[in-house]
Amino acid sequence: MKMNWQILVVDDEEIMCESMAAWLREDGYAVDTASSGREAIEMARRQDYAIYFVDLKMPGGIDGIETLMEVRRIRPEAAIIIITAYATVDTAISAMKEGAQEYIVKPCNPEEISLLVSRIIKVKNLQRENAILRKKLAKQYQFHDIISKNARMQEILTLCQEVASLRSTVMIRGESGTGKELVARAVHFSGDRAQKPFVAVSCAALAETLLESELFGYEKGAFTGAAERKKGKFELADGGTIFLDEIGDISPKLQADLLRVRHERSFDRLGGSEEVKVDVRVIAATHKDLRAAVEDGHFREDLFYRLNVIEVQLPPLRERREDIPLLAGHFLDRISREVGKEVAAISDGAMRILLDHDWPGNVRELENAMERAIVASKEGVLGEEDFRFLQGNGSGRQFRAPAAMTLAEMEKLMIEATLRRTGGNIKEAAASLGIDRSTLYEKLKKFGIER
Amino acid sequence: MTEIALARLAGGMEPPAAGVMEEMRQALEDVFAARVRVAEVRVRVPEASLDGARGQYSAPLVLKALLEGTAGMGEKVLGVTSEDLFIPMLSFVYGQAQLGGRGGVVSLARLKQEYYGLPGDGELLAARARKEAVHEAGHLFGLVHCEQPECAMRLSTNIRQLDLKGDALCLGCAALAMEHGR
Ligand SMILES: [Zn+2]
Ligand SMILES: [Zn+2]
Image (cartoon, rainbow over all chains, first blue to last red; front, side, top):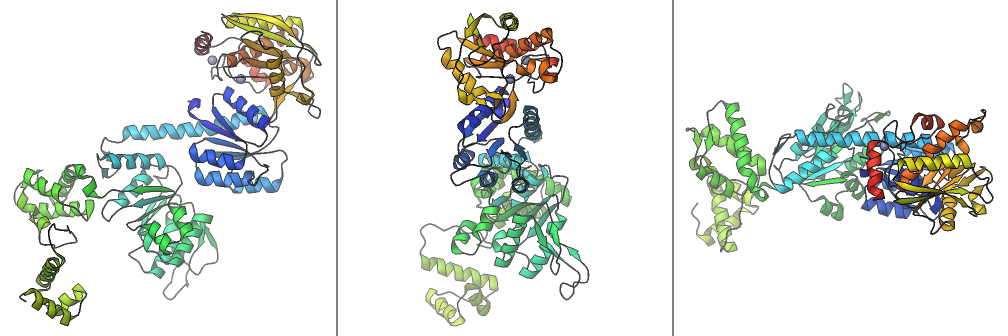
């Protein structure tokens, strides 16, 4: 068991490094050494060490505390033990504040170090055993509410299990309907926060001021109508997880506020002066390209890096078509039970339609399609005719660039489709197409379209 | 058959008693499939290895001097000293050995009852010395610390823990040591 754990000893004095490493190796650990903070940080990037022994005083730029901070950023789960020749209260406090597991003064009693190391490793072994146990318990293709046999999805689900009990922020990216919230829930409910609240907030659905009071709460009298003190979502999620959906849509002011919560794990309620301390794991999601938003200056870079600690990119349904029969079957079971209809199967022809469809709305669109078909079906088996609406005339957001079609032909089709939708109403069609009425009349004449 | 040289470290340091050396030699032969002989070694321990303020010798520096002074003297060499040993991180060590390597050192300083202000006890010292010899030699045979309460490879960080364990290897450690010796 011990052999699986690696330890890094960081000290500028070689004899100090080597003798400590030799002593730990006798205990069965794989031990590496680094002679500077810079080297230690490099090694932390490449290798996941369970424990770091870091000397406080090292020459050459990066001292023990800075090394500690940087390693904690790269490896938030690692245990870092700061070593010093002299105990000073100041450095002890700053080391502990920056997240050092322990602070020891050399020379240290061997018994003390041995107990400290075995205590840390015991906890790590337990965490690892739990993770293995959970993996065994999970059903073959189902992880919480996520069903997939797609290799990429399986990788994502494994990652979710591995990071479930960490405190690190997770950023889930994916098109709408790919199941970002399901993934967030799966992370929460398979980790050690499972018994604590999971609070979901859609950032896009609320206006800025409303969102701010939603997130942080307010004191009585904070604004007109604030008759009672109200707890914000962050407070409600204390000890658990907050899921911030559509994080790409929040204002610069809220970005700054969120950064503070991430940084200091505290915030103020609206109209309040007292700081509220919280322990909340943040899982954020967006369908936007946040990296591009950072480059454009629409999203704060520092917040992006704080949120993007663990990145999960969900594939669209059209890139995991092998899951369509699995998902369709699952929805068939669930929805037919919910609506009280005896629909037992999906015909081969219907399945072909489902497999051929591009699903711009992803899993959610599939779920809606299944519901619509089940509700409307008259037979015990869903047939091709039950899914005709999927092949309809551009009724939705579904769009496939047709081969061998000119832009002019496309424009003509587009105008015809819009007019059909508005029932021939020119004013409405022009507004919908984003052109003025006289332009629309010109185009109707040009393409010979009948109103 | 592996050859172990049990080196009595002298030269600037008080040499350990011959009786204790023989006890350790016997223990090693009992436990390891090895031929063990006691060698008289006058190793020049560097000045720098004595930390005046601590009154202790640096285990890695003594080990280095031992390895240099005994080149070609047996496959494995275990030095025995009466001086107290330390490594920079720790207040003391009973001994130190290269894991699966050639050399190790054992200190008798803290194995003596006198160290704890008690009257001397030759038998107790011999028993402790046997355990330490087997333990450090075990490291030379590639063994790491063992959780078995009786096993000599159990880590002891104080004298009480040393007295609680035995001077033989548990079955698992014995098998691993044999594997290594082959
Ligand atoms: Zn040992
Ligand atoms: Zn053992």
